[in-house]
Amino acid sequence: MHIVHTLPELRHALRHAQRPAFVPTMGNLHAGHLALVEQARPLGDATVASIFVNRLQFLPHEDFDSYPRTFEADCAKLREAGCDLLFAPRERDLYPEPQTFKVLPDPALADLLEGEFRPGFFTGVATVVMKLFMAVFAGKPHGFGVFGKKDYQQLMVIRRMVQQFALPIEIVGHGTERSADGLALSSRNSYLSEAERAEALQLSLALRALSRDALAAAHALPAQLPALEAAAMQALAARGWLPDYLTVRRRADLLPPQAGDGSGDLVALGAARLGGTRLIDNLEI
Ligand code: PAF
Image (cartoon, rainbow, N blue to C red; front, side, top):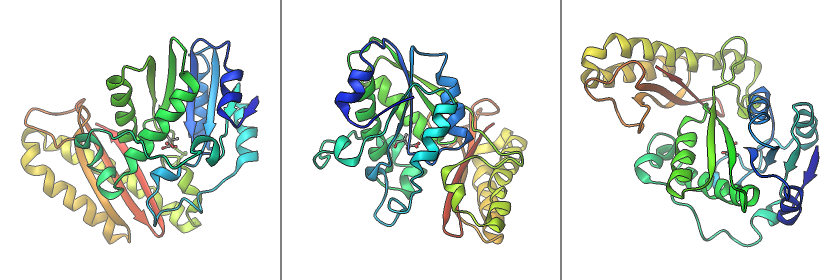
């Protein structure tokens, strides 16, 4: 695997590629990231990953400084997974000057759920992903971007960004990878103590229970859902969690379900803090 840090090095390394398949990451890689690389490999004529902890998508009180940086281990894993090229820019390579031009996602999608609790998060994500896309795909007739469905709303924001800017990039979503007991794999799981790790599973169990209850109430979902969501949040809070949201939304636009929406249209999404760690998960219904 070839490793490059600067934009000219990246462009040179990709000069012969016609349709790169790209997996952007912030490092601290786990099996979920490697599954994205596996998915990317047969798609394009060069498999590219990036590692960059993007300051723009962290709020001042969040974990930018403490976000685990595990570069050597990440390189070994990417090599093993068959990645051809790793782009690992330093901050001065990607943001040589303060990034005052930003990509502002549609607030109708980006200001709810994660965007409500992490204001500006999706602007930071969209801006860096656009910069990374320009770095990898500029001048290429076609390409693929592979993203995990665990970050469900992020995947939707990126899909819409690519659609609205008419980028010649196909966005591929990969189903959430889970550990044997069902916990969604996440770089932030490494923050959990042993006891928290055992408890963490309760978020996906709560989403599963909420999904079941929502389907059972499908005949009157808009009226009944608020009480079901409140009960799900209370149950998690009673176990010591601080839930931001547990909710059922429409897959199409992440808005609350309307009469007639049912199985196949919906997704249950949750975000909650366990000790010092904020976890997210979702389940398509
Ligand atoms: O999902 C992530 O790891 C990040 O949000 C991304 C897409 C690499 C942008 O920094």
